[in-house]
Amino acid sequence: MTDRYNQPFIYQFDRLEDIADKISEVLSLPITIEDVNHRLLAYSTHDDCTDPARISTIIGRRVPEKVINSLWKDGTIPKLMNTKEPIRVNQIEEVGLGSRVAISIWKNEEVLGFVWALEIEKKLSPSELQLLKEATEAIKNKLLNLHANKTKRQERSQEMFWRLLTGNVQSIHEIQQGFGQLNVKYPQTFSVILFTFGPEISQSAEKQIDYLLKTTQQVHVLLSTTDYNQLIILAEPRGEQALTEIKDFCASTVRQLDERFGLRGVEACIGGVYGETLKVEQSYHEALAVSKIKQRFPEETMSLTSFSELGIYQYLDVLYEKRKLEGFENYSLQKLKEYDADHKSNLTETLEVYLEADSSVHAAAKQLNVHVNTLSYRLKRITQIAEIDLTNPNEKMTIYLDMKLDRMSL
Image (tube, rainbow, N blue to C red):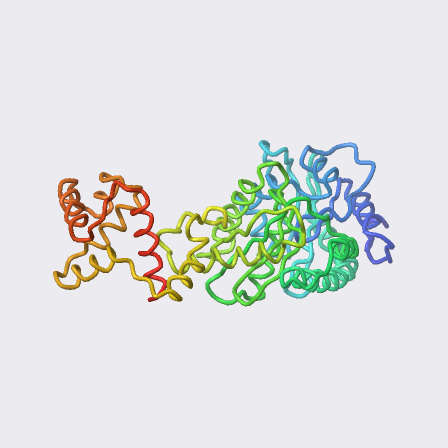
C-alpha cells in the first residue's frame, strides 16, 4: 500500500475544504460534505466529473428539496440515520443524481452530517470504503465546533422570537437590528404558524422537526421555537401568493412529519399575513385563535387552517361576550330547543346541518342520511315552531350565529 493510503486523515486540517480536497485526492472522486440538514459545508475542487444534483447543491449551498425527497423515498436517508457504515446510492435520473457512496458523520448516537463521494468514473473498493469511514473522524471534530456555535445562535434566535411574539419590542429599527445580529433575513411579508402536536414535543421529535424546517424550500423559515406541545415559526413566502404558499407548506410539513417520522395528528394553524414586523404578536394571537376555534368546533373547521378563512368564527368571542352581557336569548332557537326536549326530536341539529350546507336540501339530506322529502317536511315544521323565515338571509344568519354561540357556553 502506498504512503498516500497510510492513515492520510490523521493530520490537522485548518478547514473543511482542505479535508474534502484530501478525501478527493485519496479516493480520486468528487466529494461533498453536508450538515445534518443537507446544507453544503464543503466540496472538493477541480473535479473533472460531476452531476446536475451536485452542481445545484454547490450553487445553492444546499441540496435541492426534490433530491432530498427522492432520497427519502428510496430509503437512503433513513439508512444514513441508522448506520455508521458507507452505503451505495443508486442513480436517480429524474432529479439529476448520479451513483454515489454516502456515509454519516456521528458523535456518539447523533448524526452531525454526511459525506458524499460520486462514483461516476470508478467504484470504491472495500479498502477505499474503509478510508472514507476513517475520514469522517477528521470531519467530526470540525463539525462539533460548528455545532456548538449553532446552539448559541439558536438560543439568541429563540430569545428574539419570544420578544416578538409577546410584543416586547419598541420599534421596527430594533427588530431590524435584532435580525441583523442573528444574520436572519428581514421579511417583507410573513405569517406566524402554529403546529400543535398531541403529546409534548420530545427531544428526538424536536430534531426531526428542525430537520424539516431546515430542508424545506417552500418558504423561508426565519425563526422558530417550541412551547410544550407546540411548534411556532415565523415564515416568509417566497412568491406573490403568500397565503397559498404558506398553506401548501403547512400541508407538506404535516404530511412529511407523518410519513417520515410517524408524528401523526399534527395540526397547523396560520395567523394573519402581514408586512410590518411589529404585527408578529398579532399574527401569533390569530394563530392561537384558529387553534382554539378548531378545538371548539372540530367538524365545522376541519378544512380551515388560516385566520382569514375563519369567517364568522373570527368574531364569536366578541359576540359571545356581548350576548352574555346583555342576557340576550334567541327566541326562535329557544323555541326549537324546547320542542326538541319535549318531543325527543332533533330539529335544532337538522337546522344547523341545513345552514352549514348553505341551505342545500340535497347536501343536508345526504349528511343527515334522510330522504329529501323528509328533510323538506322537517324544515316546514322548523319554520312553524321557531316562527322563522328560512328565505330571509338575515334571520338565517342570526340563528346560525346564535347556534354557535350557544355551543360556546357548554
